[in-house]
Image (cartoon, rainbow, N blue to C red; front, side):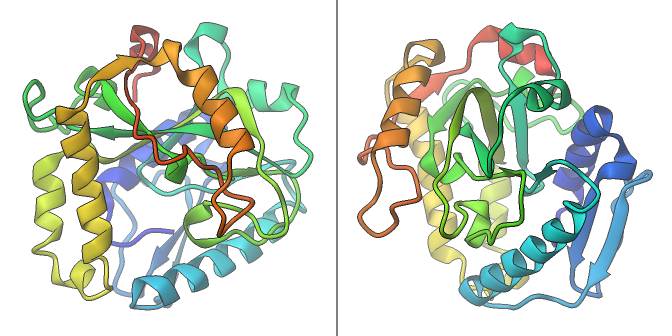
Length: 270
């Protein structure tokens, strides 16, 4: 489900459409004032009543709505992937296998998650995004983020928590070869422009925006390590460490690790 997000929606449709077929994509536009993105193709598009205005209330309604839709889709499909328009789930390119084939090979009891990588713009070495080129040609630093180690892929009906961050009454399972790449923080100017978007500000997302800006500051100023040196350790930490307030969400024990994405990921074309 998305609102006022033409750019990322077209990228989302292009990426998942090539892998899964556009006719197997389901997009719900949040508000009757919304229009289908220009690159919609054969995507199943539904324009629905706005799910809420303040972020807390809206997220609860949005994910309850999407949980119900996923339940319906699971009567037709073996798996459902739920994610936002700026999130791209990938298989490690070292395996030389596409996402549908990989998911068909692994055992998924209830859900499976990819390790979350939150890409930011390195303000000292990276320029503003060229929207005509792949992201991974322009961005190579990311925060290992528990916020994006999401319970995105499900094999049975569940109730997603806000933002797909967890599923209620179930644990999460991080696959050793899956990653969720988040690019919503990959351009500083685009994020700053959000502060001037009154429709966005009115939803109560100022604090949320400041957290996003912090990702760019960390990417720019913190020492980074090669991703391959820490991916396995990060999965273990997130698997066995949990926040006190939510046993079924991953934790990094307040560590904010910045990685440089291995070169092989650039061949993904995202």
